[in-house]
Length: 130
Image 1 (cartoon, rainbow, N blue to C red):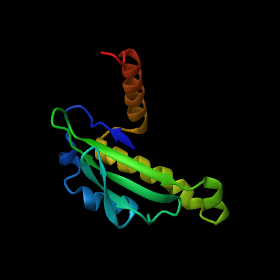
Image 2 (tube, rainbow, N blue to C red):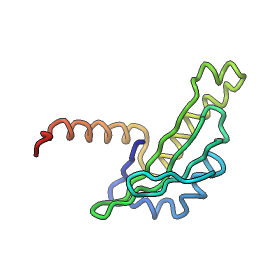
Image 3 (cartoon, rainbow, N blue to C red):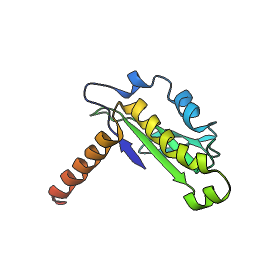
Image 4 (tube, rainbow, N blue to C red):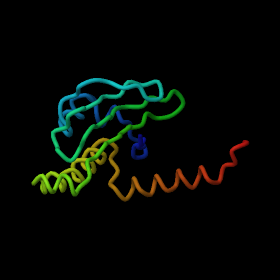
């Protein structure tokens, strides 16, 4: 499960007031929920795009900092999807994921990658015994 930060000065609930409808728009019908970090996330067990096996997404709430978007997509192997004749679905999968994240967070793929790199580097610099 990955968590994504919002653009500076913005809040997830302002960008996505109805998370359930937002997830359904991008991935398909929500079939249940799953707990993650004391938060209920939405599960799409049978996503519209055949390149995805399962999608879990939603808002992770924190009391001491801004909420984050959580997203976990189980993807089928591209070779398998293409062999079934779903070449466009394989291409659309990347766009769907990136569009979903950019619309929700206000950050493009490059900004999200840079942010992830910084958080990993920050974790590496902090000793475990502090």
